[in-house]
Image 1 (cartoon, rainbow, N blue to C red):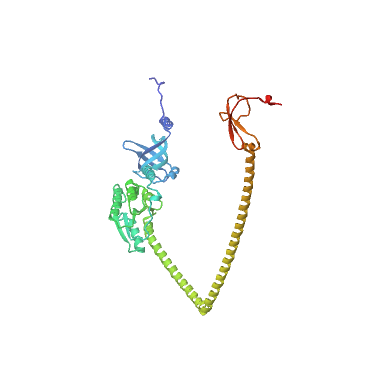
Image 2: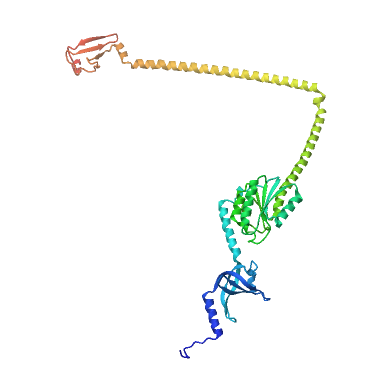
Length: 429
């Protein structure tokens, strides 16, 4: 190779070329790994390494980009970082300039939280219709929590201050770590089997999402849903929400608030009973005063001072009423009888007129029938002649000598044989 064929780069030139190649090839990327060697000098910028089991990459996050952080970075924390792949020319090392970064562990937990929440929601475990009200006067309370945590101290403090006579059964469990969810679910089942409890409080004090995670486990959610005893979920602080909160019959923002909800119902009931007692006494006194006043008024009334006059007055009123009734009934009977008589006369007149009209019509029809009767003309000297077949003869046509005919007169009939037949023109004068 000749001297002219050599391409000789200066270090800065080659480094700049590599930087341009990296930035042009990868651009902005997401990288997931574990933080290590975290340094935060007075400049406010953060320098750290993102690594996995077999490799690592240097990273820098400038002060202005750190305003979007929702967690505190620390060595050993799993993160997802978003930024540009570049080269730090002074050291010749490639790095990622991070603009966004999130807790990868918390992100995975949040995804698992949303997945289980959606599943149980579709099954109806969050439905308000399946949730039960808290008992009005609880006497026995079950508590599922750590026996050494702040939660149990807060619960017992509230109960002992307000109602020290309440019976509390504590089911000690772990509230953090791998076996915590199984212990909590088992404790809920055991308290249900124990019986005699009016309400259960299940919870713990505040903490990170990882600390509270056992209350987001499906086994705990289903144990709460299967409980025959009403359950109050009291996990973390007011801003914390877990799957247990959605499944439980009641969600309390803190363990102390859960205790106040339990004993508060009894306190409210006792106050209500006291108010009712006061109102009842006041009503009875008012009623007694009204009865006394009415009795005094009755004793001084006309009824008690002049009973004979009252009886005489009522007797007179009864007589007057009886006379009015008799008079009214008599007038009514007379009116009804007159209407009956008038109706009878009217009906008789109608019947008589109808009979006369029908008789007149019958005579007229009889006269018409007599006039139309063909036999009536026989009385005037006419006769009717039939041939041997019974046909009336109206003409000599078809008659022959020797034929037999029958003739009917007004008072009888005779038989004859034809000896001669003459046509009408033969009989003209």
